Length: 273
Image 1 (tube, rainbow, N blue to C red):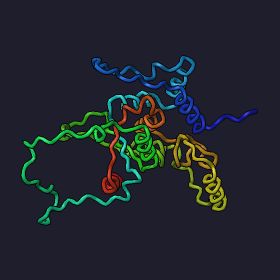
Image 2: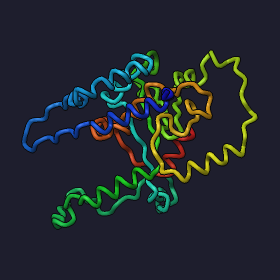
Image 3: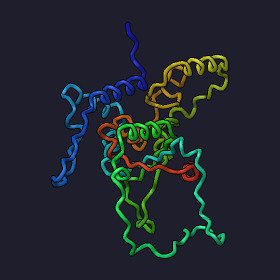
Image 4: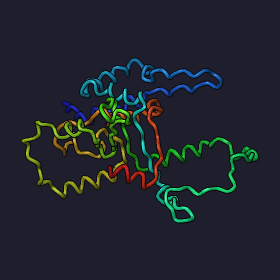
């Protein structure tokens, strides 16, 4: 008798199956009036639409709908620190007089000077090789997500941008309270921690994972839901799920995720918050 898959394995398989069947979004034609894009998930084959219903049932309802709503409202931002930025020195923000925070002034003013047009080679669109190189740098670079809260702010901070949560897909973490309660439920309060783990077994497991080809798995680097973990499910919240769907279903939902390439100092600042 074949054993049932763990929730972690089942969710990984379902998301990967939907990923392999997602259609490519149609491009907007030139010189045509802009029209809002249709629901990209409506073009799924009929045989795979039931997978969305299965995901909706497996996640605590209505988490899947809330995650898709965050993407639809443009509340998810991906911060990328490409590897090439690590070799670049930070920009000098000091003026000639040693003052900070002031951009150097240009004399004479250039506002009314008509410069000649640039040659065609300088204004040409990037080639497919350039686009592929940029995408490879983004994939290899350090990433984190900022997800704005969908709840409206109240009181004296109503004019602000609201609460922003930090999400790390690879290490599987979100700074919201819902993820903390999911990771440490009340049912595990009286369960003692197993601090006597076999270090040799952990070392051999780590060596085997390094030899294997890196594959995505629902839950990232966490041990939740694995055979060597606590045997339970994988903690998740709507913010983390929205980032996972925007990353794994990037062919269709990737346009709903904003991207921002940041410097080393900016990434460190976001990580320290």
